[in-house]
Length: 394
Image 1 (spheres, rainbow, N blue to C red):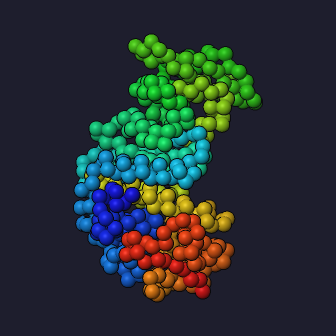
Image 2 (tube, rainbow, N blue to C red):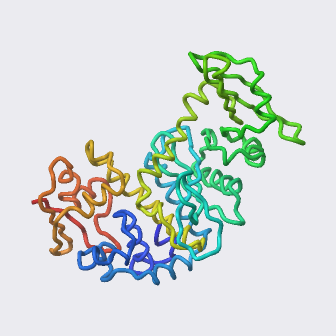
Image 3 (cartoon, rainbow, N blue to C red):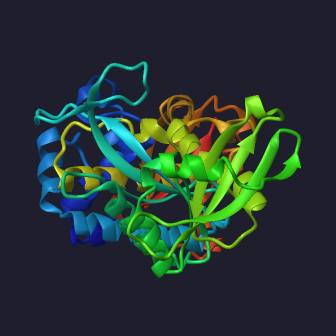
């Protein structure tokens, strides 16, 4: 994927620099600003380089590649992950994610949380599998890219793996006539909470609710936006047992599933995207030094590659290690194990010392070339000049 994105060959410099950025995301560091922790430790050799990449080199390479190229790399990763079974559910959660940026641009400041001070923010939109919690892709909001248009673009990107029958669940920021109309025209199933405007408030308070269990009742109706003749399905939710305690919420949907299933079984899948942000944000999803869209799309796309690799690594680990977040995994395993490197014949030998047996790494990585051969994988690593890699545990 990196060679395709950079249009380069195995021995070219550009995909190796990109690979170093992938590795940096995996170990949750931010390049030269952590140089003292990375220099002379062999980190640079993992991508076949003899030096740490400068910020200027990274900036120039990312800036040379367009937003469109980064999206194509996302789609390639999406298709590969789909083939490997990383997406298993029928719920796709879409949610905005604001990343603090240190850009020098003049721009409005926003708050991630009501109690936080206002800061410059990069607005992103991520789509995550509601069952596995794995990301499918992202888009970035900008002055020329509204939340609705960014979400439509994200829904179209997901169709690279034909997820038309899945239910998209989103938040109030996606409650727009344009998005609902688009979903209906494309036959996409979309569920979003409705903003309680006066017209909707007055409508849902006088509906005939069906009690599902104590303190929870639902009603089904329709709602037409102003100057629109074709209404959308509206599901009203009422909580509380006494009239004085009633609280109301409303949801708009293009799906025909039962209202009980939509609100009690499907909609909670939206929180998988919040878990993704909390679990993986240290891999470069929590910082943005510039608002240059070429750089931001390229950098975040490389972070998604790192996240996919770390996810596959976690699946090899037993509990509770497979539940560690990105930062804990990076500090305790990727950067926390002692070892040395030497070359024997055509193989790079990595010797690791005092690795806890509970991690179960020995069975996966000792005699790695032979393991790869049995899986039909060429054990020669192209970016390491066709050397093989093997591990020893002492």
